[in-house]
Length: 210
Image (tube, rainbow, N blue to C red; front, side):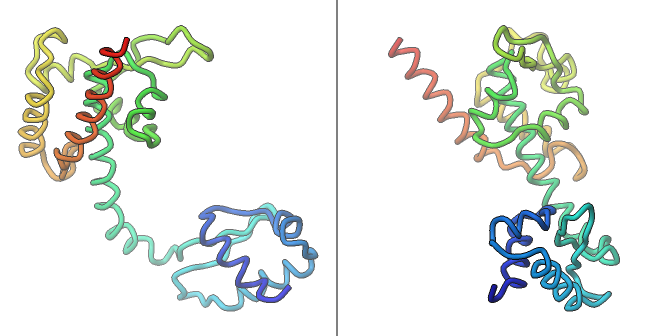
């Protein structure tokens, strides 16, 4: 096949994970010998100082960054990931606060993205906890806020949960007080406000219809 090497390289780039060599053979209708030759050509193009390397394991191949540049990569990407995680965590926390008890799938239905990492970080900070299981197929876990959440936001109990805008203001204050390594660093309140306003309006509309 013409340009097989480039097809394999571009496929690996998009995949971001290892792909079995046999899968290339099956889907591209090429022989194992052709695939292995293309892989060897790819490997030959990468020097030990190249930023991207081809790694091979268990009959799979994958594009990977050069380990010697790991510190530089972390210096650039870690702050970006922290900001993204912070935004997701606070967004998830607000949803749980207003919708509890709530399952992970229900949270993701509101956010439209995976919430696994956000839930994990909130549990690590003891802001949320498992409060039971939903009476549904699979008995999914139900999440709710903790006493630490109440303490952090100055609430005596959940009956005193502030109005939506008040909670946003308290989040803003906490964000300013915490260090740059905290859960609350660099969170854009307007992003959360837009998402929750849409959800709250949808809920109101559903209640009016019913």
